[in-house]
Image 1: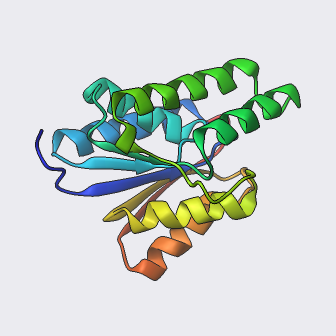
Image 2: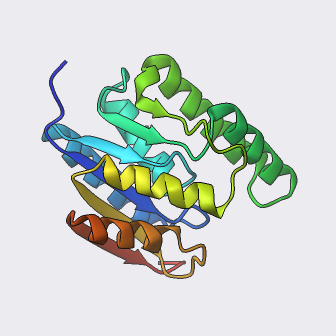
Length: 176
């Protein structure tokens, strides 16, 4: 296994995604991995899962990926199933994401970094996860859907700027 030359954090909107955004995420992740880099992300829907899927296709052993979760995988999985029951996401989205994270864990347990201190998934847990992502990365690339309102991507950008790592951002509008 070759050592990763540079870790690139990938962050973006979880609630919305455009086709162009998915294409761009996959392209940038593929280029990063081909150059010997690795991907750091947060294990959420859309941008994170696109990046993770592309990294798995490149390296099924998951040596080129670090996924930071805001809680343990067990708590996180329960949270996603609850969000599906609430109608915030679909059951398929929840189960696909959980399966993806379980695959990572089975392929390389060290690639899935759980926060065992947080017992609930909330904004504070996500923002702490964003800090963990930034601390593990040499650069940050964000994919932001303008209509998203959660603030997680902007929080990650702010944390990366404070840490002094380079930030590159792509912005999208729904329907484009």
